[in-house]
Amino acid sequence: MPLPLPRTPHPPACSPLPPWDDLPCAPPAEAVPPGRLDRRLSGGELTLRTVQSPAAYEELRRTGVLRGSTATATPEFTRSYAWMAHRMAQRFGLPMPPDASPVWAWARVSRRGLVSMLADEPTETAVLTARVRADRAVLSSYDAWHAVLNMHPLWPDEEWEARQSAWERRWPDHCGAGPDGSIPALMREETESTWEGVFTLGRDWVQACLPELTANDVLTVTRCRPRPTANPGR
Image 1 (cartoon, rainbow, N blue to C red):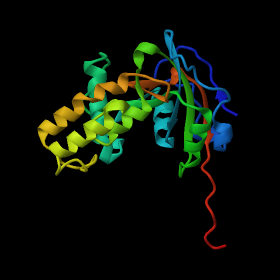
Image 2: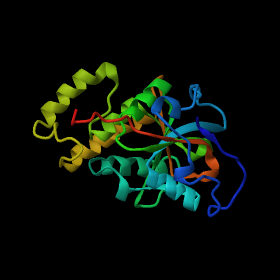
Image 3: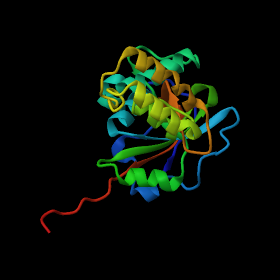
């Protein structure tokens, strides 16, 4: 079961988090705490869940602070992460250094969905539940975020077909470029101008982006072991 942690003030160098090998280890269905996150996302604090690699967890444990970096971001999505970091700084006033990438967490996600995602992880991960002030996080729609990841305009559902047809006529040679492709500067500018819609929250899953997560934010942590792989020799 998840390991509850004391919430007491401490300097970053004195993290209360236990070493990786001392964490309770469980399969995905047991690594995620029971219940679901607050669907209202209201009030002065947010309860978040985040899945981190052993290296990221060890950095958080050792230093007391976890910050994202473009150096460890998925290469094809670097531009999308950079856009989010820029908006966090410019629109929401959060401190984001030039080479920073957000720390990602879930603010609203079904328990079943998170368990399913963990079951697909090829290696061990840390599942952390944290409590942070709401003004430390930027919330965005998980569904809408896929437009940003794919470097595609974000249009309202009811306008999508008409807008997409017009877009393909205007940019016939670049519509399928994807996150790795090179597109004209004007096309990129017009694409990014539609992305502010990711900050409009509906009833779908909601992700939270933070400049940093501190060890004192963490309520519980569990080491999640990956799904066993089939033995190819049998």
